[in-house]
Image (cartoon, rainbow, N blue to C red; front, side, top):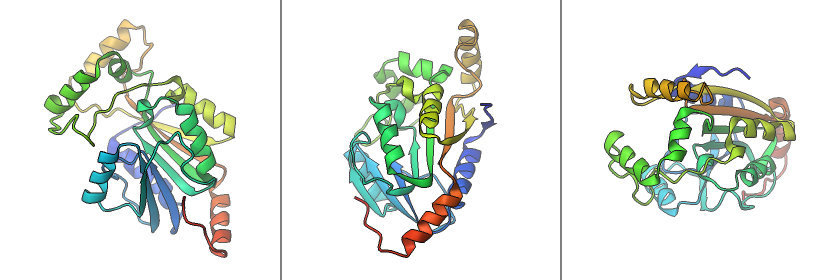
Amino acid sequence: MTLKLVSRREQIALISAAIDAYGDGITILEAGCGRAWPLKLSIDYTLVGLDLDEDALRLRIEQQKDLDDYRVGDLRDDAFPPQSFDVIYCSYVLEHVEGVEKVLDNFARWIRPGGLIVLRIPDKDSVYALLARTTPHWFHVLFCKYVNRHRDAGKPGHAPYPVVYEDAMSRRGIEAFCAAHGYSPSVTAAAAYKRSWFKPLAFLVSASTFGRYAWRHNNLTYLITAGSAASARAERRSDERRPRAAVG
């Protein structure tokens, strides 16, 4: 599958448009919701947050006040009944998880027929991910604090978090997950290097590994359709004609 390089702003617009296409009244799970919601949607929706980090979730509730429902919990647990959500949005979470296959299986169970699973992950086979998983966590904290100038880096509720990068989180792993469930994925890449000096460094590292690790991009955005959007709309219309159980 060919990757298209896009900016972060273009990614957000692409994701927002894909979710907007589902229309009003949908229920969205932000899986690993953290402290902020970056999407700008033009529809009415219910937003449910799930996060293992109680401090981050508390900050989200106090500062953003944008969650309709929330809970502290593990993405690997059976937190919700089957077919609870029209959209599942998971952004830069899976690289921190041990047991990614369990999380993906839960997503497949929680999504409604025709729903949309949005995954944003670092590409495990990129230079960025190679450096991230071969340097210690304390270095990530210092880099985030003094280079990226996030003064609260490493404090409770704030990134960075330790990385794992399991194989199931790789491009190969995500596409195998889609094939196993009969899902239709589309993927874009973002060459969103925050520092201008990183791209030449990435090129040198990639060249030294004979191209084993990609240097032009660092992140992947997957839009995974669990069936057809038309079937999702038909399912919602059917739901609207009968009482709908609360999530959880």
